[in-house]
Amino acid sequence: MEKDRTKYRKYGLWVLIAVLGVVVVRQLFPVMSALLGATTLYVLLRGQMRRLVAGRHWRKKCAAVLLLAEAVVGFVLPFALVVWLVVREFTDLALNPDPLVAQLKAVADYVRETVGYDLWQEDNLAILLEVVKDMGQWVLNSSLDFALNIMLLPVVLYFMLLGGERMEECLLDFVPFDRSETSEVVGEVGRVIRSMAFHIPLSAVIQGIMAGVGYWIFDVPSVLFWAVMTAFATMIPVTGAALVWFPMSLVIGINGSWGMAGGLMAWGVLAVVQVDNYVQRYVERKMCRQHPLVSILGVVVGLSLFGFMGLIFGPLLVALLVSFIGFFKRGYLDSAGCANRNSNVRLW
Image 1 (tube, rainbow, N blue to C red):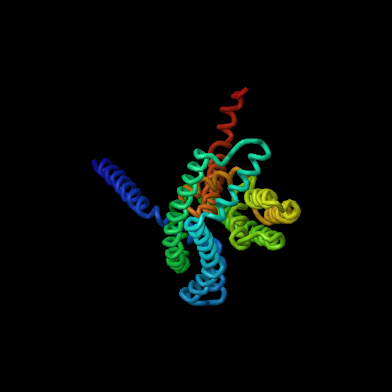
Image 2: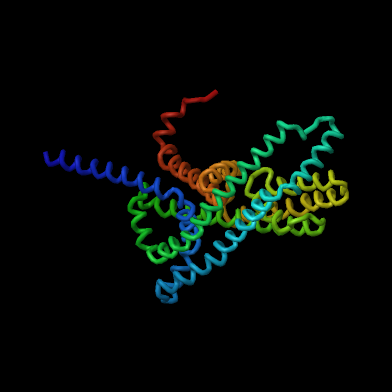
């Protein structure tokens, strides 16, 4: 009888935890980007925090304030300024779409003269206006969510830095691995976080700067805005920065400056693309490099879940999922019994 009561209490407690957990997570979902961002920055800063407190005997609050300032100056403010620039440009475009319409009209005229198809039709214009409207609404909603998350992120990070050791001890008690495997799991998760948090911003910043130099040389209007858009585009695998500079080159050529267009296209191939290849080789030597499909799925998942910040945290979540699947496979599927049981199974 006492054993049944113990089971009842145990499973009843699990039900309460699950129900309350679902309720809390649902209510916290709008600020999930702040929680993920604070966790990522904590992983990157925990080593410095430990050296300051244990090595140099700093007070925890002083060390946390110093590292919080480092995170704000190095990540929060630059990212906020970039997003503000993008939102401002999209707002100006919504209020004054005439320059964009003129560029699209020139492209439509060139296509009509070249292939005989008239893009400037009522149906195509309706679709274009609907796309612009939806994009503007998405930018507005994402900017509001971003503002809330970017203000909450430093607060969460500060308390993580203060209580980091206790937080890690509590989490390790619930890790579904043996103690012998915990060190490997924690190390791999840390490597994935550092790789994704380092490679994505580094590649985006460098390619954005290189593209901005090319835009300035070849007299592209709104150089800073298009450099930022190129930096964002680098986070999209396969096409990357070419998603911006290649169509821009075509538009410049269609407007009558084929020499400038060819120069910009050559700059994109010889400078921007080569810099990206160099950064990728550097990251492959220094830390783990994820498969491009991880980045593709991560961008799709991240943008739909977290808006602007999903460009970073989406690939990070998918990379962690792939790592956890690898741990499960090595720990439970690659055993000798499993291998013997499936030795005669063939897919073709």
